[in-house]
Length: 204
Length: 132
Image 1: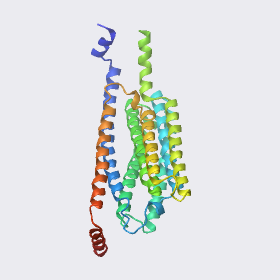
Image 2: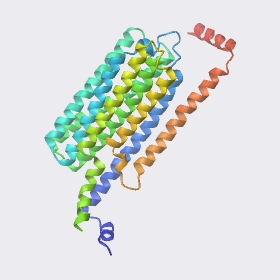
Image 3: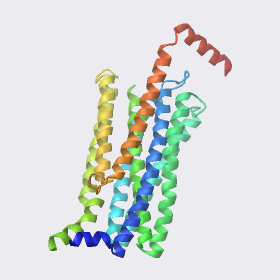
Image 4: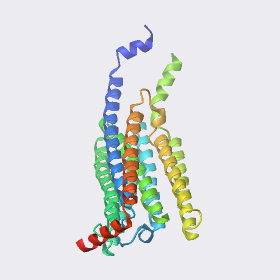
């Protein structure tokens, strides 16, 4: 028997643990893909209703190009720092993990702050979700993304406390892996919100 | 033997990425985002005349899809997943569903609007106005 076959038949405890972790992460990936379908249906609703402004304002008057670019760059940078964080977690640098995720957390907070500012501005100008089909679809799609980001921030906050207290245990690294998948996924969804809702809203 | 151990040791790093993959993903995403931004800025500065609307929609879609692939490769490391590639399979399935839902909705709703006569449309709007 070759050494490889022996290894496959009798996995070491470390291999078994890695195998179990991979299965858990894969389960989380499955959840993300169902979330992707949820966003897909919200995008479908939005593109169907994007011209149904019912005499109200459309994307061209409501959206500011520079404002949305700032939001996009903030979220993109947070996705990058989150990646650096998970890389440090794999290499066992606890302090760097805490710093990277703290930066990610603050950037995420800045993003959600800007989004709430925009929503508040629209609401006070009378352009709330009640104004038109277009605005209902807009608030539902962008709001659902914002809700995901807020949940991610809550999760990130608890993870930082856990890492600070218990260190980079196997469980914590596994959780951080799933958190980083979640965060990268939300950044990818935002690329499409940026393009389909804002940029195309300003163009068309 | 020594070669295999070296390979095994390198494997987890490869499927989780390195600092270089994250930096290249970040730089690429930044460049694509700025391209899209400048394109729209130019379009607005030219009073929505040039580049044409059709060109803009196609160009912006291509930029977004490129960034999707860039992030899937550099941030989520889908290219270095070991076989069988279940992550990629499930992603493909999700994309098929999303494309069917989005394209199908647009197709149906476009024809619904198109097949309404102007008379029907104005009646519809009139009733909507009165109803609210």
